[in-house]
Amino acid sequence: MSDTNNIHIRPAQTNDLEGLVVLENASFTTDKLSRRSFRHWISTEHRALLVADINNAIAAYILIIYHPGTRLARIYSLAVAQQHRGTGIAKQLISAGEQAADEDGRLYLRLEVSVDNIPAIKLYESLGFQKFGIYRDYYQDHKDALRYQKRIRHYSDTLQHRSVHWLRQTTHFTCGPAALMMAMHALNRAYQPSQEEEINIWREATTIFMTSGHGGCHPVGLALAAKRRHFDVAVWINQTGTLFIDGVRNEEKKQIVDLVDSGFKRQATEQKIPVHYTNITQNELIIAFQKGAIPVILISTFLLDRKKAPHWVVMSGFDDDCLYMHDSDPDDRRQSEIDCQFIPIAREDFDRMSCFGKNRLRTAVIIWPL
Image 1 (cartoon, rainbow, N blue to C red):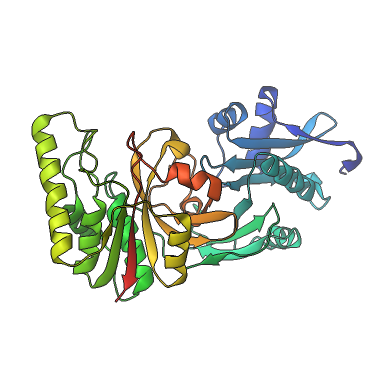
Image 2 (spheres, rainbow, N blue to C red):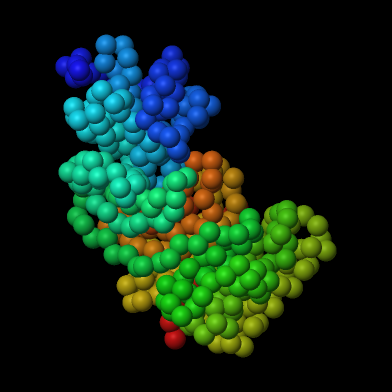
């Protein structure tokens, strides 16, 4: 019989490791956290790992992951010992987890739950979580997952979003093509993305070289690729010089990057693609989005992973507090694919994130249906 009068919810500690592993193995047959994973989550940052302690024994736990650079938190795992189920412990843990996420500045708490886990679904819905999608073949046993979300800081409900089908980039250097394909497919469902198309767009838009490895995609190159596929486009760049050349050390490679840059800009003039050499503001992005366009935006990944890499994302919504992005490149060590969809970026963080390099390059490609 459960003694919930003596429940104590607290952060997990190193000496809880064995109890967490025992509870995990008793609760799940697939998709289980390993001992190594628990050891990691006990000691790392960007998370809340809380346990419900009853008479010095672990009765339940909740693991909430905070995604760096965003206002998003996710319930990664929740388990309650068999003898304590139905006693309200899960509700108390979720409430404590919401408070921890709120104190960390998160706006949204997300989760996924198996379609046949009716008790959990009823619990989440009773706590104010709203279903916003389904993920097919999500679990190791091939069951589908329902996707739920709750706003844990309450402001006016002004969210406007677009149905943008999320795509994972298939190489480490094709974020630009993946972002462009997401935007084009959202604007015209007849357009069909594919890996071959992803590589073709990269070949059309690449700068050839960057700091190391394969070149990334030039904003004007992406605009030209969209134009060839019968979309209307406009480009914003806040500087007139050759883009991405500062990270290239070899002089011969610099000459090629400069040649590619000038070639793209000449072709844009020939194709009558507007290129605005000025900063694009959040308000201009929102106005374009409201009028039916989808912006593809260059960001620096520094706030996300501390790597300071240029990275293309797709704007998928906005509200009074955030701009929402689709990111084609999940970190498989700590993210699922749903973590990279409708990512809430606080307005005050977006301006820092949407500039790259020491010259603070800010650029976006606005895609319109013809």
